[in-house]
Length: 522
Ligand code: KIV
Ligand code: ZN
Image (cartoon, rainbow, N blue to C red):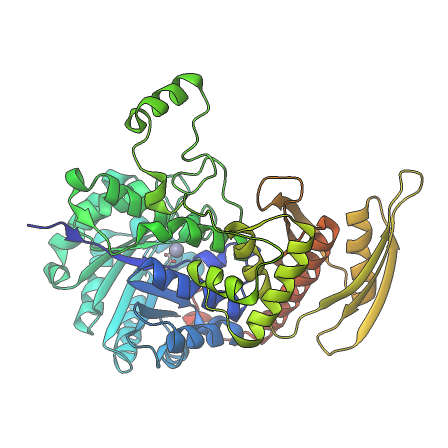
């Protein structure tokens, strides 16, 4: 008998996108969704359509354009949420509505300020309503691992009676241990025999660093869908990391006996894309995708690996796509060479987008001897970043000297198309240009984080800047790429500002729901 197939449900674009400071525009979400399809995930949770018009549009675009995986939209157990999710996923080849309500008394009393009876009613109504739009309905009893198993079982039974096809049991606050989680699921199977006729799913947060361990315990207890996110991003400490869980099943297949449909060679590229577009760096020692995950530092380890890789390596870096990026272009490479290099990297860039990419490529190739696969990835993702209604950096001057404070002047195009000017004398060149942008746009954005990384090694490497700003209580990130680090920083700043403004607007437009029926966004 072959290995048991585990469904990979990717929530990078929903739970992952809820990480503080992340604000992906629709084009960025679509590009990530296409890459998730290439990676071979089974389900893409594309967003939370009622959260904002931007979220709705992104889910709808993914549903229309991304083929292969099931496309899911999240909805609280409320009619308006379910209807919005249904509309957003309607055009998908295989649409799913994922609805949820908390079953823990902590949530019912303090957050929902409701009763167990009302929770049962809301769950019944939400699943029935979702079922009137799509066949594929997932139901989650939120905060299940801190809830009473008997009550959770009653709610799960109601969801099954109304036709739910997947039951997801979240460890919402990352509190459970693997043994407790497995016991909880086993108890649910005992209390709800019908659970064996649908797909049981697990959704684990990493607050105690146990998300992947709990996910494995869940699968060993019978779950056959795993909810996870690329690079483990998500609320607070994040979700179970997709790459860790997939490689756990692949590397230990002989002992565990489970398989996924993921093309593991796409893992590294997916991780880089998500990190780049979200602005969330991957820690160097992160399992599977960290810079050092396959590096050997100590003499003894290096000696062993040179003699035989199996001495200190349990996986081959090529199986996760970490090696083999040896594609190189130079300043004499033409449009055709660029197009086929991009195709090899999984980007299909045509028409005007190809012209823009070619122009940027030429500018960079003039300043840098060779343009590598990593540089091209950084360039193409950079082109996706300017969403609708964005500020654009038109030009800047920065006077830098160690004898007087640096002075910056900038011209910025506003979302309405006006060109505004600003200048500022700051503590350093980056501080000066950031404050000059605030002066030009008349915004009091506060810098929360700033980082510069080199895309590749070498003195002429592209610089990649990431900025997190806060504006009117909303925080958002922006990124920029250039061989000039001041330009990369300024690009990142105007993009973060645009993303903040979009979030402020979306927040102001969020529909008001009756308090008793409202579960705050997960
Ligand atoms: O963590 C959680 O409980 C969630 C649910 C919406 C599944 O994200
Ligand atoms: Zn979650």
